[in-house]
Image 1 (cartoon, rainbow, N blue to C red):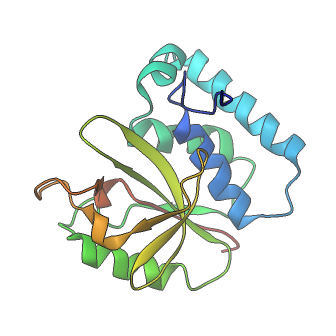
Image 2: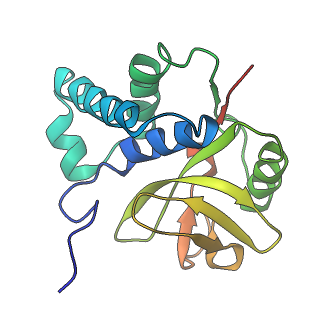
Length: 173
């Protein structure tokens, strides 16, 4: 028998992705701070009548951005968040190139959504190499091979990655 893990009964990977991205940017933050941020995220969802929906169905990118603005931005005003592919068509190779260049500097992380026909998952990209993507993930995904990933507009591969949902976080500006 295996223990239950995050995601078995809830779809709060977006909350974990926000916390984990901030952990990468500020690795010295205490676990007490992380627990406090998690509680504040749940309070924010509850206060916007979105907790049940988020727990059962997950978070949309706009909910993630709103939660970041309400919960994280006041505490971390030096962290900027960009969506570089929101208004431009991005093939996945272009997204990987931009992610690679972005992550060469310290205090940076990328939150992204990937999935299959049956599920989707928010995670944090730690680094990108020519053949794979290294993750800092709440349910122990460690690496995605680029060969196994496709854009949403292409026939299904192992995982679909959504460039329009990539959030580039940068600290210390």
